[in-house]
Length: 206
Image 1 (cartoon, one colour):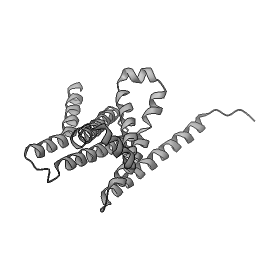
Image 2 (cartoon, rainbow, N blue to C red):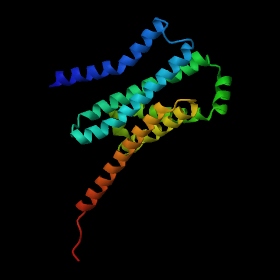
Image 3 (spheres, one colour):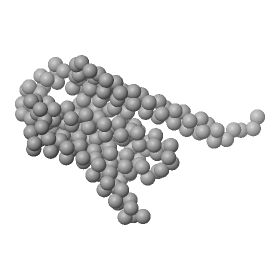
Image 4 (cartoon, rainbow, N blue to C red):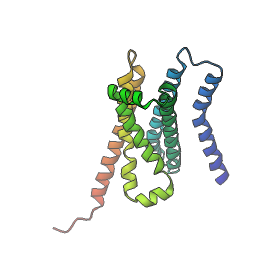
């Protein structure tokens, strides 16, 4: 059983790394197009968003299938969302701006969409560093409250995505619809649990 779970975990890790391998292959074969830095920046950002969405889908799947073991994979996929977001940020800072902090500061002031990206990244950073079991023990009940901020990060990411695009908005629209459905599912699950909680409260005799 343990060997099976380990094999499954390794398979998930390998699948999560495939986008990175694909991007690296395109770098080595000079297949990123005329603006390689921009293409690299966009692709890493896209994969960060996709992994964030995959993280959000784990809970609905877990509720529907009643497979509690999926919680471990939710954390793993969430860490990959943070990983791709970090590489997305690093490409911007290192390759696009060459760590010219004055230019970076001006870019942030002039581009409001960057604020939403920063906000989302800070949340993902906090979720990543609080993922270990030791952090969960230290935070106690606050851990769940903190990790619910992933929904705020998702909304910020969509705004960040929409605000910088010009032209075809089909892809971000699809992501927005998916996020809306996930939020509705979460709201429905919360309402159902609240109703069950009320039914379990003992009522005094009249």
